[in-house]
Image (cartoon, rainbow, N blue to C red):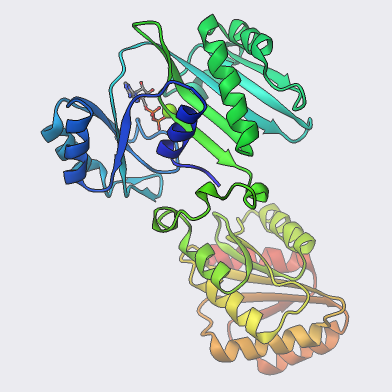
Amino acid sequence: MDLYEHQARELFEEYGILVPRAEVADSAKEARASAARLGGRVVVKAQVKTGGRGKAGGVKFARDPAAAELTARQILGMDIKGHTVHSVMLAQPVDIDSEFYVSYVLDRSQGRFLAIASAEGGMDIEEVAATRPEAVVRMAIDPFEGVPHKKAAGIAAAAGLPASAADTLTALWSVLIREDALLVEVNPLVRTAQGQILALDGKVTLDDNASFRQTRWGAQGPADRHEADELEAAAAAKGLNYVKLDGEVGVIGNGAGLVMSTLDVVAGCGARPANFLDIGGGASAQIMADGLSVILSDPSVTAVFVNVFGGITACDAVADGIVRALESVRLTKPLVVRLDGNNAARGRAILDERAHPLVEQATTMDGAARRAAELAHAA
Ligand SMILES: Nc1ncnc2c1ncn2[C@@H]1O[C@H](COP(=O)(O)OP(=O)(O)O)[C@@H](O)[C@H]1O
Ligand SMILES: [Mg+2]
């Protein structure tokens, strides 16, 4: 789970990292009152869980509380990369001398963490990394050794950050470890004209596997529901193992491994999977109907691929499930079904007999994926 900037800021502050004074507001009127409490001149910052807010017009200076109200009115409701702005953070402006980039991220392939740092932080770090990779320093971190002061000083020196940034690097490491984060990123970390090191923006991604012991952000309520994909919420309410993806081919399969390879095969056919959905071993009519209704309600889906390998749950039972699901769900998009394995012939016969005009069968996984991709693109 990603935290909002203001939540990351709150954590940083607790760990002794300097941050600008700030308040959160979800209306323009509140923004005005916050600005007044913060001394008048403020930065108004969209609170959405995506980066690049500055470039999208979601970070703006306001010279007094009246201007903060106006600016907040502009930013609230704005769409930034598909995220609607429901609240803003008002922060005291900082007199920036230079902007740096620092992050810690889990490097799964190495079984370690990686410190990434650059003296050229700010809004264009991706561009710096792409065009001048030598300006971005990466150092492996042994999770058991962590980032004691000496290591932090080494990272700062290698990246060309001021030596005084070392304490911040050590404190950030504590945030990562004690909060069970997979990523902690500060961009920009700044040196002020007065020589102080401050975190002006923060991104923290928590490890969901540790949420049982990190209960603090668990009950976020409505603030978090804004961001949660509505489809995922609907699927979760039905107990489905569903993850929304960006494509146009809806995918249903039995077994996580099969579904993962289905996503690959769909991608291999030049289409993009719209979701991951594992209906597991049961594949009852109810689960099939629930899964179909979630997938069909995704406006980006233009075709659906049901990929089943019958094992303990035989294909005829799955076919029965599909036929009964079609009684309660109105099929509005083409459905390609591939049944293989235990009782595949009987399963296919059941679907042939039902002869739904939008349901097609294919005998192989590759063939079915190609057909689904074709139908998705034709739509
Ligand atoms: N409190 C602040 N005082 C001064 N400048 C700020 C402040 N917060 C952000 N900025 C400036 O705005 C830029 C973009 O803000 P940031 O919070 O990093 O948003 P994003 O990374 O989403 O664009 C920063 O690089 C910094 O130059
Ligand atoms: Mg930033």
